[in-house]
Length: 127
Image 1 (cartoon, rainbow, N blue to C red):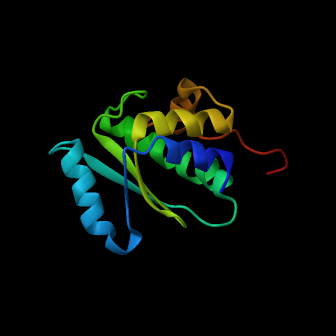
Image 2 (cartoon, rainbow, N blue to C red):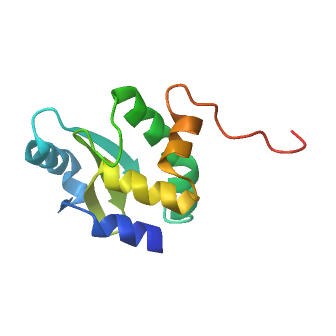
């Protein structure tokens, strides 16, 4: 794995078997409360950090912002992180903080770029 993935996994409040994912997610949802939501992320074996910082971060930011969740609060949302080692359940707020830090952003910058009213990434030169 990578340092970022290891950090995220260390935050897990529960774990499950990928082969029994639906039941494990239901159990995690029950543990977090009736209104808890799972945000599923299937981590690729190659380039997991880039996947998290470049693909997951924009979508997760938008999802949380549209729901009115203000990290470090998790607002009842947790990540169901599918890895080669299994399924890990991580509260969204702390996971968001770790991914934002790995991208080199502040949380405010992530919301400014990718939130509901976000401006996106700056255009690349030559495009």
